[in-house]
Length: 305
Image (cartoon, rainbow, N blue to C red):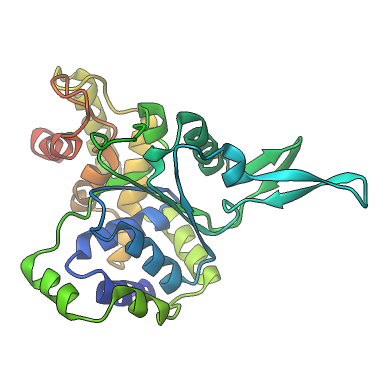
């Protein structure tokens, strides 16, 4: 790996112990200009990962704690009448930052969730008839607890599709957990982190990721994956063309992380569970809890050209 992000990965791994693959997937999502959904139990490091990435990448950061009584204006901002001037002044909400941590997004009502996801999709906010662009780069890490927990509003399929990738952190292994238990408080470590890359350099890497070469044979491979999900009786519905574009964007970014300028079949397979897991649903499992396993089955079912 011979590019500036090796310092980002190294510093992040000093805080998030034992999760090198998840760190790489999160950076892949950022390089591909997508948004990331982390679904897992409370206390496994979802929030810490977002803080570390923001500090390490030198991005302006805002955390939004979602609750059941939150309104869209709490995220986007609101126009307030100014008595002295006689007009309205827009007060920007926390969405106007380069990296957003949408913490426990499934605890908010669908109306509030939609306000966030519209901003993610459009990269802008419209209020009082005026459109305001969001900062660049703009990256959302949303966390959600498992949908069987009390007080959650699961994201519908159309909104899940707005996230380029979904990952899970899971429990740490014994060695990583021992390091957490015996080491310095993670919050103290995060407070002392320094940026390892500049915003302009990060945007340049995002542009490079879009230019990574994909051979026609690999386009055939992606199409074969999409076709298999549409023709198989295993799934309630197949992957959309947008899912195919997301898969290619993530594979390009994964290849760039390895310092390569061309995508390999292994790159597609590496990102497939993260890209397709939340978009696939088994006919037997309406909760989409086995999406990652369904994606892994795709790797075995579809031959590489």
